[in-house]
Image 1: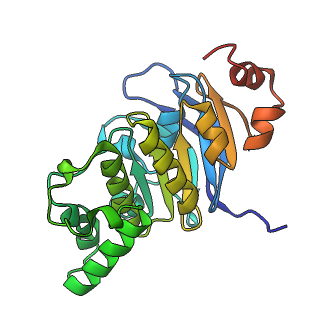
Image 2: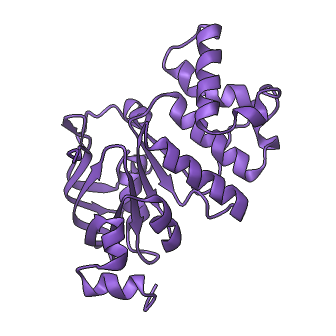
Length: 256
């Protein structure tokens, strides 16, 4: 059996929002396995989105938040004060709950991050854009309308555009924050299928309130409650034979 490789490792990690009197996350220890899907589940307010957004330091967009512990990636602790956050967010991309297409053409949405990387050659750009849109399962639908405004796309198409934009810069990890909660069932199915295909290329962490979704698409699951990581393991075990009573109660719907 092939040995699992840890792509990113959270060690004794705590987080406190600016002005708060208590930690929102308390000494979290969590391995994120390479080329697998890890789902973060738990009731609202348990800290799963706070943890997800710590993994590429999106919290730094708002001053005064406090990190303690380690988040180790590519041989370094990314919580270091000298971490290059623009480079970090290229390596660890994020897809948000609501699709966030930029107010520009489909082509320019995908080209945006590539141009930031210094790619100017139009032939190279066009090739990378086509590859990214194919990777986001969108190329067939938009290849004749790349100059159209991105906001003309449907919600599901815009979410796949955001995924294409993220993978265009060839990240190692993509973080998904409830990516299907605003989508219809058909679009949700398309995004789930895409996530399962993408893990051949990238490592994925997804926050979801939908436990059936976690069961369908994830390889590993972490159950969180009130800022603590209660249990982590292979998804099948977490859902069918959890070790912790609290996990069992949540999975069975006794609270949520």
